[in-house]
Length: 241
Image (cartoon, rainbow, N blue to C red; front, top):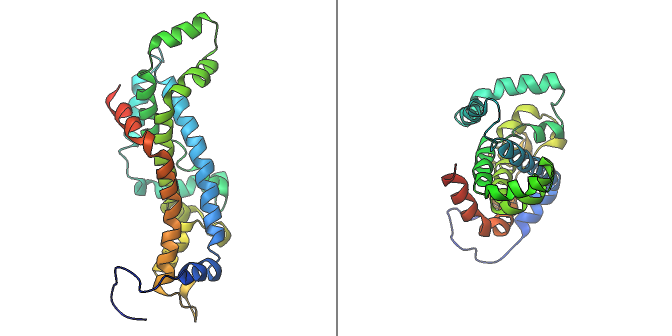
């Protein structure tokens, strides 16, 4: 191996990708991350939209207090809650489970506020017309508000996907079963030469870099899909309210 850093490789090779994928069974943490992130993102978008829709109701009891509480949760660093999170997950039997990885962080203050602001930008006349036609709240929510809020939903979904895919603190805190490790946990072990590199096993730096590239690919794909909605979703969700 030649020391130093080169901007472009002298010859193309996928040896590093094959090595890291096979020798470290990277496919398992990759699938774990994909499953947890996809399911968690779906429910986070749904719950953020539901709560955001409820908070648009001016006659909601304690509405301002609830909004204040949501904002306060966004100011608390996640590191300060790790001990409480571990204790709560232990008491609920969520340690070393996929459910624990999905449920933790399922509610997002950012998503709730953004969706609330987005829904408030929808003309009230549409809601009143639907009420005249005896449409239920759920029907109004699913048939009118959600279809008209696609940019906001995609924005919340993208932010949630990136956050859950890159999540390290929660998996490290509640997961000790290696079969349920997510991709960031495994890559961290490889980078810092922990048990994954102990003994006679040696993982070349180019293979570790290949693993990092593999972990970035889903984020690139997600951005390509969501990019045309992100600007409008962020702008409207942030200035309205």
